Image 1 (cartoon, rainbow, N blue to C red):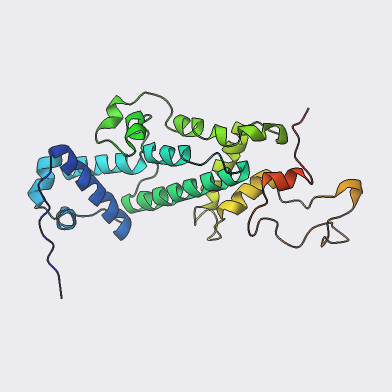
Image 2: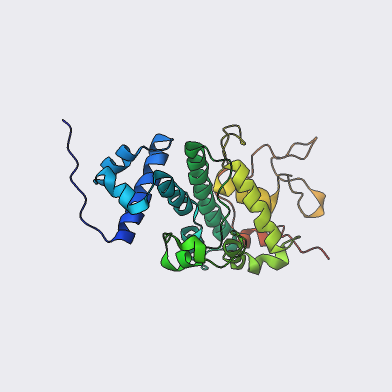
Length: 253
């Protein structure tokens, strides 16, 4: 039995535009292609004419939908909300999970719309304050690299680890973002996606088996190679406090 969808309630023009943008993005992700105006109208519960009164053309709607989908404002708010009561490692894992979801959403939408790269826009500062994309806000945003405000939001997550690191905190974040991008893309990762814990552990710990104080090999390591046959990145990652009681990283002098 087919249930006929009712008409949407009347909305102010700006709210109607935002609602249609949300519908466009939702349908594009659901069907992995550009939605038709009839599909958009049916999902939104409006007549097709409403779409053209709100946007003028379908291309204008798509442009605004892409702006909304790639707006970094909501992601910045998620990162800013990461609790500083977590250990630095736990904060980085949470940051990585947020970025993995972001990349997954971006990859899927780019494939659906046939895009080769995200739109190159400004900072969307108004969107960050509001907690969601503000229709038409890109023209009034502060001009600066789009990722810089995002990076500024996460430096405090790792700053207190500075004395344990051999590189600067911003370089750690840079490497973390690169591995998160490649490890979250099915094509680049050959279908073997990395978990957030694996990504953070690889960046902070590396993949070489560690040697205990005095040169003794770790338990379970190979007598020939010193390698531990157990993947150190599988399962829950140890906390920074646990690491500092064994083999802490120290800043290069």
